[in-house]
Image (cartoon, rainbow, N blue to C red; front, side):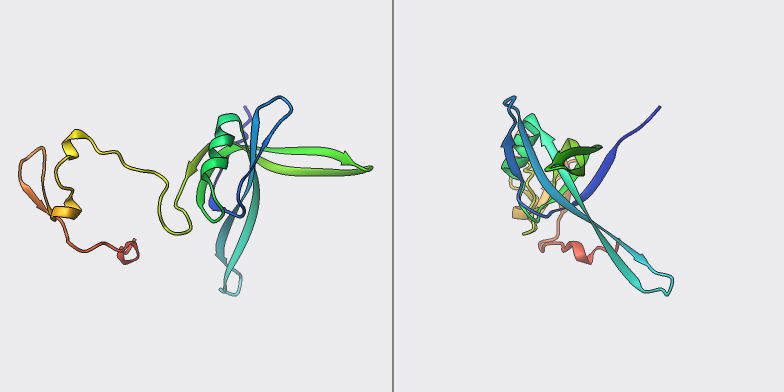
Amino acid sequence: MYLNKAFIIGNLTRDPELKALPSGSKVCSFGVATNRIYKDKDGNKQEMVEFHNISAFSKLGELAGQYLKKGQQVLVEGRIQTRSWETNGEKKSRTEIIADNIQFGTKSSGTTTSTASKTSADTAKSPTEDATATSESSGEKIDYPSEEINPDDIPF
């Protein structure tokens, strides 16, 4: 059995380019940068950056072209493919990840692209508006902090 699977999480290096193929289907191309931090033999911290070419086809490509922007974080799941062609007698090749699934992450400004939908049980004031809420299962009040929690203050 063989496996060709790639998972990368990184930031877009450029805005996606959406093109139409002669068959009429859409293809979206964009770049993602990932990094690796390690210590060299002298104990100095080093950082290595890798750049990945991503292609997404059909509806997935259309969605990527519509919602992704340069600097945005993204998780790409797909397969690695190398294409070869010849231009003016010169052989060229390109290795890329063909996306099967894309999860949009935070934008460079720190906001997320996903939205939470409210259910009918959430029609009362939210915990951030009231600072207290009632637990549905036990009926007891829960006191929430009134200030915002900074993710940098969490020790893990």
